[in-house]
Image (tube, rainbow, N blue to C red):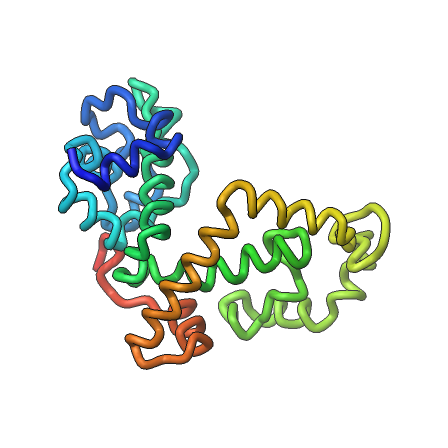
Length: 232
């Protein structure tokens, strides 16, 4: 067994998600991502089980570990109660920790996702927040959503939300005390360390690609080459 495999085994998700895989392929058959992407969770679990460092490193640098939607359909169908989705989470975490994610197109999208999602959580207390959702970044949402983003306060008031308001209610302003607690949770659980690692390796990759970190953010957020989908 290799060093990378030993590092993976330290992740509780490997302990809970990889038990007695018989390589039956049920996880692939039920997987929604496998229907659209060139993605086979059975092969990924098989690769991890072999424990070969070069094969695991190839996985950590690949696009395939970023196709999973973490829906856990695999867990509900596996006859041995394995969790390929948990194995994927462990692989993603190690890829982020070691900086291997910047070697793949889908992996590099971890940077804008991390900046947006964790930024929303730490600054607003929500994973998605209207104040940071720019229609220009999601033009596929159409003209109705564009109009909605231009009339947020009026629309949320009509819906009965407490948008940016004090006290209870949907989309209320989260007290600073609660935001500070969230930051402490990130610090203690390793979330802050992971955020810093993603930023560090992404900045290095941006320089390698001849981009500023702002250009890199925009590029990785919207760029998608061919070859990821089954029909391509």
